[in-house]
Length: 178
Image (cartoon, rainbow, N blue to C red; front, side):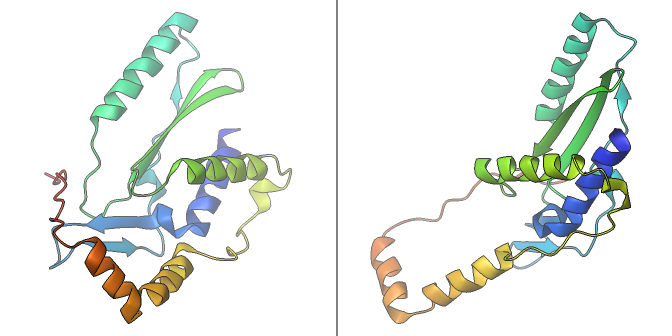
């Protein structure tokens, strides 16, 4: 059920701040990660594309073409969310999804955790009546606070100065938005 799937996705976007963040690399004196209170899901989730009138081979060709086009679309670092979702109706109640995200948002473990959480939500018979999920027990913000606390000691700073002595800055090529 696409309505239930999208509702579950929306609940998770509201629950996990990482899906509402964007990176501003050029708008401020220093690169900045900004977490919004909310985002417009229409900016990240495309309307369902119905492939049910196509043969199996044509569906496969369309999905392959979409994945290639999607991989060619680069994310921009102008503050927009760094993920997008496309759902394809294959036949009857059978759907395929393509969810693309920038590696700055998720690693492999987090991706699997997200899909497990999404599947658990989608299995709930009361899903469409769920308005909000309970808050997370700990967040990335908590992790950063703990990490900053660990790295603020003089011993830690001295260790990293020695470890990185002579290292140059790694300038990564980023895609500027048009």
